[in-house]
Length: 462
Image 1 (cartoon, rainbow, N blue to C red):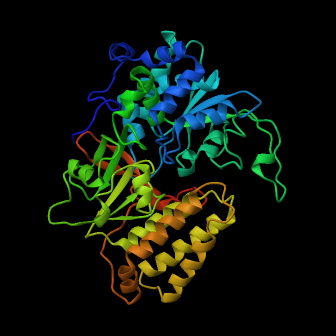
Image 2 (tube, rainbow, N blue to C red; image 1 turned 30 degrees about the vertical axis):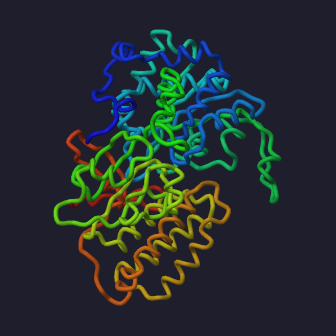
Image 3 (cartoon, helix red, strand yellow; image 1 turned 30 degrees about the horizontal axis):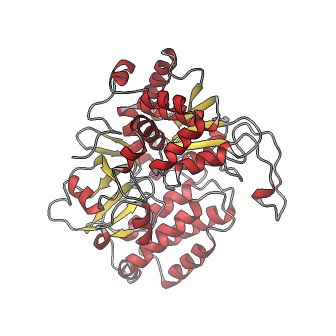
């Protein structure tokens, strides 16, 4: 697949010597010459927005941590990629882990941190090796100048990637999202927080403000400091400058990860993937499990935060699951809902019980047992599933399920009327690996994951 290659070099950076020959370290050296404030100004001038899903302006996030208040400041690189249909962070780590560590050091300099962490999943064994190799090599040559960087291994749960839950994992606990954001209640915070009804987050004291950035964001920072804000703004659009790592899986000829300028139309990206499979017609795309479905008539949308929002959805982490006219969209909806119901941590009862109830009703419809009453019950649960949530998962359930019901009403009506769906199991597109030849491996075991995050025991007789 054709595309740009500054974040994703055409060949992996194999060692620190190759990294230095390719200009590695220039961004960090420039940041040290500039100093923290000018470094932050350069990132602000570039217009870089977070690539982890929210698209929040990177420099503004840095400033919120730097200016937050008392305690020790920390920086954390989020490499806990668990969004279905996404593989871009692991591709980046495999190709150039050094740039991630360099960007982490630049961020630490800007906000005044002397200790940093890179958090990823223990199942990402190849990526763990590459990250540790990069940290050790850059430490050994003195480039990090005393910044202590620790690589943290975490569990496979989806919520590990949520930034408040990520801090819990760094501290050695389960990925259960905290009440307060990292800039306010950061790593190893000791200041007690109020839990009484009516408490507001702005009433709580700040303790150990912590910056959490996605690894693609940090790698972009290293390039921006080496090449300048104007260079970065020469790509993309005014409001969404730079390039973007995009994952495409599902009903395309050549799935994979590519780097494109922001503002590239989704249609063009799908063209780079070879288009639909023979004799098939593309129907819909889901950008992870966080956002509303995008129908094929809208595939002309430019991949920017503002253009996706104008279509009623979001760019997220730019991971797209593509479905064609052979897909059973009722079963797809059921499986996306089931994924979120299983991965919900249970701290917010409305989220866990609501998403479980929605999934059960969708299963009844999908299995031919459903009635119009199930649709009514789903609608009622969708109205409350976001109540009192610590994270975005309940909203994800609302976004995905409600948009699928609106987009494919005939499919749900026909199933209730007794028309059977297409045969074959539907897997959530949770990517384990994408090989160089484009072969995608999905996590088939997730179909046996239970709501308490354990798994159905395997049958020893099979």
